[in-house]
Image (cartoon, rainbow, N blue to C red; front, side, top):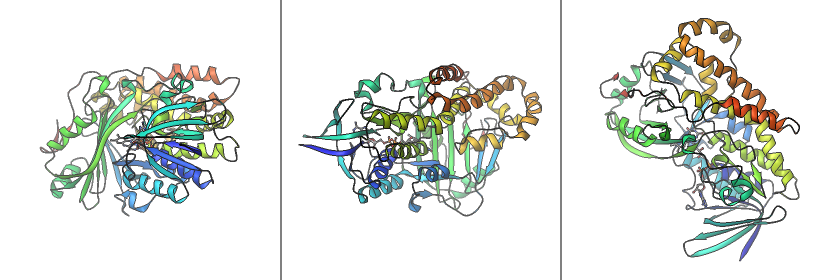
Length: 469
Ligand SMILES: Cc1cc2nc3c(=O)[nH]c(=O)nc-3n(C[C@H](O)[C@H](O)[C@H](O)COP(=O)(O)OP(=O)(O)OC[C@H]3O[C@@H](n4cnc5c(N)ncnc54)[C@H](O)[C@@H]3O)c2cc1C
């Protein structure tokens, strides 16, 4: 039997559940289908998400999803590989979100608004440019089909629908390995709070602060600790691009954890791949819209996709508001254009910066941080997933900063100029007459995606010896 609905959402992670909620609240009939059981869909770890993404996307933050909420002043320390050059930011409006609670909240709210959640794996997709689209699912030995005006692919990096629709698979290829971050994030209890406090203190950090070590395995790799103010719990997050010849995020995390005597029991978390690169230029065709990781809507500098997926959910629902045919070319075109105008520049600039960073060795990062070329304003903008718009103070002092690290500056300042250009030009790619030309210019400015950092020894902080190797 075929079931008919307005909107079929494939994948009930944060982007899919938010999309289902937005459409159900608008009075549409919605079915979500996920290959995993209800209560286990989407990310299962702690993600850092800027507060503004929730506000702009108009989704509330369930209080039980906020890990490490506290009233004191929270620091975020970016520690260069030499251990002494640091950028310290205070009270960055970043929420540490237990994704299990956020996804459960979005799913429950969507169900309360009338949506349905089924378990099933995509088997085939049948789309016609006009009219209904049908997706066949299987769940064990059971098969079922859902026919919808609009099919939303929210199935993550694999794009279960995207890869089965010719109009999309041609333009939206699955990201190459060089455009994938391998990440791991786990929460731990703390066996030795004093040992953890001593580890933090080496870098000027206090209980309740976050501390990030970029380039620990070269280039784009990173290790970040999120600490609870009473040091009862700590989060460890790692990431890298293994296709560039470094260990994957899981191996980096295991290596740190093995040598961190202050860590206790592993509480929860997980590992997975994150698409990097710009979002696809076309976010929908043939009645199918892409949201979240399925659309590569990720802030690539640090592989953050939750906020950008929530914003996509809202942009799509707003673009479809009042439409008779939710999957029409007009709706999908409006969604693509609105998303590109609002966030395309930010995400392209962030990917350009990612490509630059992945070519840096540890000493380059020491020099960037030590010289002040990467300062609090630029680092805060990146953490908050905001456009990095250097203020007047930075511009005036840039020559002096550049003189402190001329070799790095020669590479960094043109990249900084290109990120500003890409950010400003991207909205124009939606303009009918000049869009394609601008897009080609941006493509040219983005630079090499496969650039590798020079071979370098690991600079992982040694949590047992209290020193940086
Ligand atoms: C370890 C790690 C740490 C991260 N840290 C951060 C962070 O700090 N901040 C941040 O913003 N982002 C972070 N990210 C990225 C973030 O988790 C993702 O961008 C986000 O979860 C993507 O949400 P989504 O809903 O698009 O996809 P997903 O969360 O991947 O959900 C996709 C859903 O689709 C279902 N599905 C897949 N295939 C099928 C199929 N064939 N049929 C039916 N259902 C299917 C899956 O079961 C899943 O439930 C991190 C990622 C990892 C791996």
